[in-house]
Length: 239
Ligand code: UDP
Image 1 (spheres, rainbow, N blue to C red):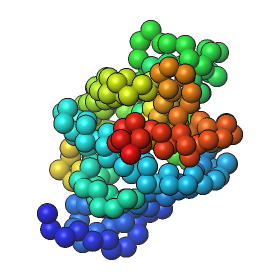
Image 2 (tube, rainbow, N blue to C red; image 1 turned 180 degrees about the horizontal axis):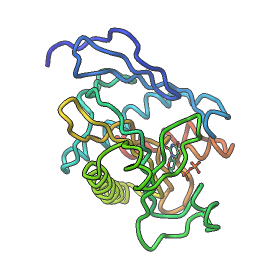
Image 3 (spheres, rainbow, N blue to C red; image 1 turned 30 degrees about the horizontal axis):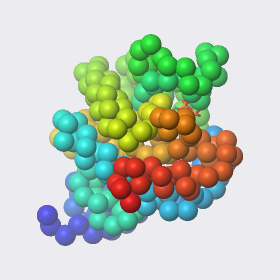
């Protein structure tokens, strides 16, 4: 591949910075150690989180690509930086749930850890000022956030990703409780998986002890978040 280099910073989010490059089709993401929760109300740092999330995301996206899911991944270029395809993000957070936890437990009065008899898909509109409100297919169509065909594809990719991740993680003694996905559209209109798949965006529980190995340690002041992130990297990447 040609030499891709950073040019100007396009965007700084809560956990990542995004840079333009000398090639219009690519951007570089740079993962930070900053941690936030409750829509930015709680702030902190998780030492080396950026390195772990970069490597874990790329590892999982490679596995998904090998199993037929198109992703934005191009090439990891350093501990914290990855070249990805430039996409326009579909402004939805797709939440996939296997086991009740977090906001679902609250909303429906379910104990955390109760297995759902079927996988649940939820959509939230990505807007920090509005607190990412939950929306349904009718809102998405009415607001033209994507087409019906695109939403059907996003839903079918999300369910397939859930199967692939659940099976992959089971062998590592990790239970996939729930997770959040984002999708983007490349210049030629292809829908690809974007953003990240990491302990920031997934609930991972140890299959045997049910210990939380994800951002809930930070959200809920449980302590041990650095070790939990490290443990996930060790189980996935062996280091
Ligand atoms: N999630 C996320 N970003 C968000 C909201 C949720 O990555 O802005 C992930 C979260 O880590 C969990 C899943 O989506 O794995 C479901 O989160 P939930 O709706 O239960 O919200 P929470 O309880 O985390 O506020």
